[in-house]
Length: 425
Image (cartoon, rainbow, N blue to C red; front, side, top):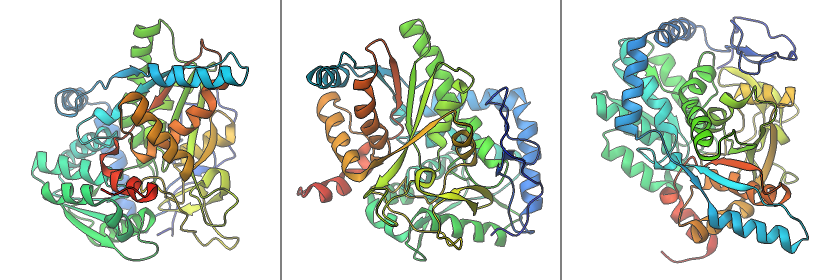
């Protein structure tokens, strides 16, 4: 699906502001752009124009704010994880260190539908209605985006079809059932590895076939321009709230931000309002799977990939030397995408954000630790971020204020976790 681009990328600059991108062609430095079939280009340009107008429309913004407050349940709480903080300080002390950052969770798992995905879906469903579209499609991996799309379609009485890899359908049965209850048609995709990449391929094929009446709600900060910037804007409510909540709780901004990364929407939503704060350290946590040294055994596209084109944009991808996309692996259905949002690729190149990887085993350990210490069952996606917090916090001073985005709750993952831990349900 990568036959054309409407602009040329320049090398990544040394930006005066990390929040200014993308340029008029949709590029963040050398990443991003619009690489789509000719059939889709008029739709992409129509979407870009419609979103530019909506951003300036006070009525659109007021309606989105109303829905965020009264339907999604925003603002989500900023929670001091006192027992986890103390536990990691004790670990630091046992190693002769005086560290142990003060840990906060941005609790976006408490949103309606159980994750950050509703933030973006509310914005895009309003845009779809504004454009007169009468049918909605979407891709999903872990199922949280699919549930959020099905939810907003039920809210506005629009038919929707969700494309989901057959592998993910099997390991995310609770979310599949939720989507069907909400009235969505769930299409199990059997091509490839039957995961998120393959679901997105099928959604794009459907869009090309049904260009007139269909709106595609992409669930992550990837895809052709304007999707990466648009999804980021809708998700930036996370970081905007964190700024206000941290100032109220501590009288200053956080020192450290941590979020998991698949395509990267929850992470860019937290990071973006802080990118021009040079004293705020930022970490994105990829899925390390079985380990970065295991061939095709992880989904860490920044730490183990190289630039290429997939799903309408240029970014870091897991690929062979001749450009064939690898399937990758993660215990998390939401993180096993072989690419990354183009803004993240640019932030890696400029050095503004540190991107690390966490293995399946480490994520499972963090999942159990959070559940037992804080009484919060995290999704496997933020469990990756939490695993890095467990490594990082003991090395930071106790005065360091660390915020981790708890972007999804773990109800959907209990069967997967039970299987890996050898526990009977």
